[in-house]
Amino acid sequence: MLIGKEEIKEKLKYKGDFVKIDYLTRLLEEELSNDLKKFVCIKLAEIYEQKMMFSIAAKMYDSVAISCIAFSEKIKYYLKEAELFIEAGRFERVEEIIKNTMTYSNEKTKQEIFFAVKELYKKQAEEYELEGRINKAAKIYEKMLEKSLSDEEKKQIKEKLLKFYDKIGDRTKHFNLKSLG
Image (tube, rainbow, N blue to C red; front, side):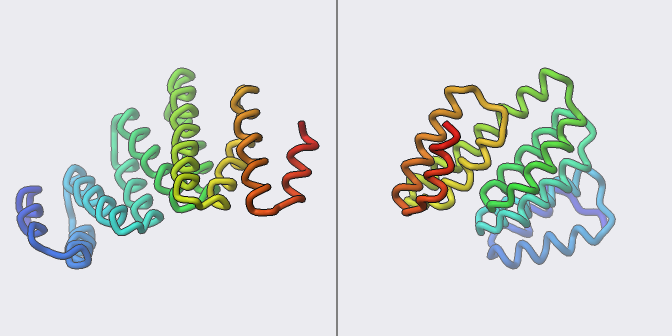
């Protein structure tokens, strides 16, 4: 069965999300061109992301990244995968993705990836903070402290964490962080 992007878009037009997921998932079981497979995976990832099914959406972007030929494109989709795993709180997966992505990178690109991931963590932590989800924000800031950050960045994160620990009443973490300086 030969099918193109326009036919897929037309079939998806007035369907509900779960019908779209079913249709696109069944399409992936067929023999598709690399370009069409990427298109279907991206569509699935977008639907899963809207449904806040971040881990599944991330896996779709992983499939897209694997099928990309250009390194810059691979890196783009791996970073999107990392962003979704950060939203899902699956930091161990983020570290695996970054390690994998670094294999496709020169020194300049590695620095750009490090900066991009740091910003993804920061953005998600700030979002949680605005939503009043202090525990989740604290977990991300704790993860960020494990990274190579400037002294100023570490200081700012520690100050935030101390405030969070005070709010949630975690004296042990507060004391441990304070004793580190």
